[in-house]
Image 1 (tube, rainbow, N blue to C red):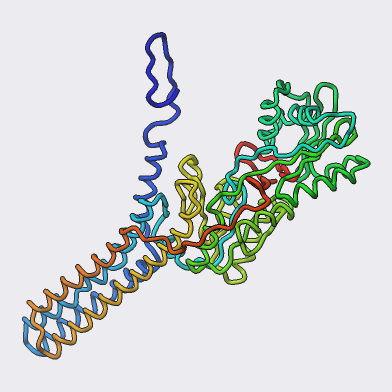
Image 2 (tube, rainbow, N blue to C red):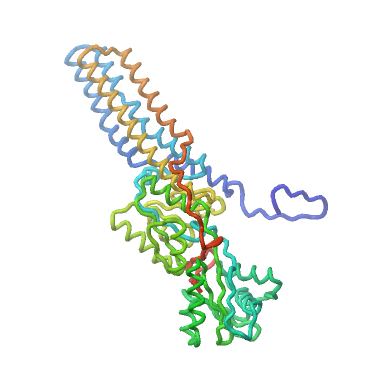
Length: 471
């Protein structure tokens, strides 16, 4: 049942699976409220500074009053020395920065993460669903057994994949159904082979779908033609899956996923925002990964990775001194997201886990929000520093003016309040929409057609099975 549905007649039973507090909007509001309460490291330092600064000013005012016997001077010193602008300089900047980000569809968990985001020097990006759209499709069916037709190869693959939970299975099933092939029902047995593919028994036949390693494990012979076809598909940016029927290679199916139009622009914008290195992490084959890299312009590629391998890449970058942001879907990449200095979840509007666990959640599929978030974080930190400088200079000048003479309480209060207003106005500048810092145009997709291969041998949202996208 969809929102706005009207039941004109009959009996309708509705089960509520969640209340208002469980909605995406409620989670967003909760996250923003938590973010405003969370303190950045600079704010914590300022709180500690105020803890000893205020008693010092109080003692100084008492000493000056006792030495000079001038109560007005002592009160003037006490009032003017109050660091109002200094105390408000950090919180107002953080609230403005987080507020601007929220308006732009960027949820930042708190001031600490906003400040850390300003220091990001390396970004690790998951390929599927991030650099690519995440909706694979069958692009090629290469028939290698002359006794079979294209429909035979695709049909047996579809019947085998009917019992699979892997993301690639949907692409094969959709292609088979679109060509009118009978792929209804479930296979008698499905055995996943982690990192290699699946072995299926269906309609009395045994079907293997996977990569060359799967064929080697099951001692399939005459695989040279299949390996060559798979290599050619991978070089063209497709994810190849070899189909074996009853011990004989039937053919190779190529599956592709479309590269996001703004992926190259995102990489360019990240560099413009001060990020030194952008690394693509993928479970797909190196050939497919490098095909994506040639389109997006990432600096490095790490391919054929399991979730624990992605975690190792992130820790390795941190060991080299980088401040790392990991961008993923919040499920398959959970270990790397949790370990990175900043974890970024894409498309979090539909993922409760992402909204609740990510340090930064991008509420849409717009990749350009990532460099915008980093740029906003750096502008926010610069504003914080400006406000601190304004507050410290104002207090110092006023205190010297009071002690040396010439600054009365009236003048001091006027200047003091003016500095508070200046700090607030300076922070409010963050609420203005900032023009994107890069107008670089993404390179053409060239020979990749609409897309490139889908990855993820990793752990999927609905199960714990390890599967290879290069099956």
